[in-house]
Amino acid sequence: MLPTIEWQSDGVVMVDQRKLPAREVYVRCRTAPEVARAIKTMVIRGAPAIGVAAAMGIALGMQRSKAKGTRAYTVEFNRICDLMAATRPTAVNLFWAIERMKRALAEGVQAGESVDELTARLVAEAQRIHDEDVANCRALGAHGAVVVPDGARILTHCNAGALATAGYGTALGVIRAAAERGKVAQVYADETRPFLQGARLTAWELVRDEIPTTVITESMAGPLMRQQGIDFIVVGADRIAANGDVANKVGTYTVAVLAREHGIPFYVAAPLSTIDLGTPDGSHIPIEQRDAREVSHLGSVQLAPDGAGIWNPAFDVTPAALVTGIITERGIARAPYTDSLRQLFEGAPALA
Ligand code: MRU
Image 1 (tube, helix red, strand yellow):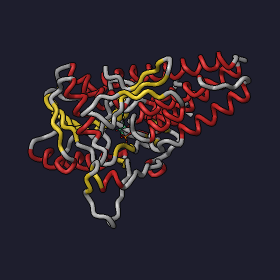
Image 2 (cartoon, helix red, strand yellow):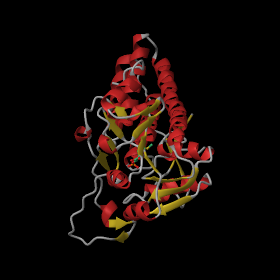
Image 3 (cartoon, rainbow, N blue to C red):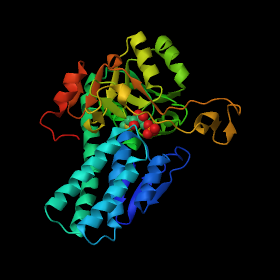
Image 4 (spheres, rainbow, N blue to C red):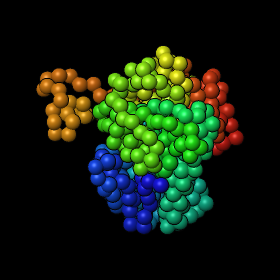
């Protein structure tokens, strides 16, 4: 499995996703601010992966803490949580992971643990978040594989793979599980302008797994559906609102509209940690705006003239009405999502 992020005794190690596919370089973060910077600068990206990174960053920060008593320890902990929360606004997994770390600390404090015991508890919780994410991806992959038709030509957008999670992936988890069952004829990876997660990362992962992969630019998705045929579409998500509206990488909405026009099933694959029942619908999801230079330039090459305005939202919202089903580790939710998403959580620990 791909080594997206790993806890080691002297730091958190992650593959630098900005350098793939040309170079496989590993970055070792030794402090919490280094982890926060890695999230902000996209060394690590993808909703579940940045949740895991934030949890490990908090554990790392507290491992370095010099605080002697619980009070000073908690002040420092909250400061590091705030640092992590300020990295990227859209993926709810980040905030979900921070909340889990806060709950873990509160339980330890309640039990009267020493600062060393609290740190051991936080390290264990961060590793648990990591391991659970891999297990969830495998479980949702198995659920999703059931609805992939035999001989499927599949389209995906952005990278919702092993690199975007602790391992195996969400959308790519479904594709991997379907491929393991011999159901996949071809995967089409949208290039995903401007950060190129599809061309650089999704294609890299699938080629490594020897799954037949073709890269297209976003503008080719429509003619591809019309002329060659696509049987199944699966994408990941950064935040799913209580009514089933889905925030994901910008361009997802366009794919969903095209899918509706061509009668192609459009599935979203995400763990429960991506579902935010506290957000009623997509209009309340904060959308990250990124640096204009990502659009105006490609590396050092200038694409747009000085003086041109640039709009660069990192994500868009696909209305629930365009979503065929939401594939999770507990099964596939279908419309009406307000009921089905809530049912997924029944009997589970409260999210927030
Ligand atoms: O800006 P990014 O690369 O973090 O955006 C990633 C996506 O939009 C993914 O599709 C999403 O996080 C799901 S990852 C399993």
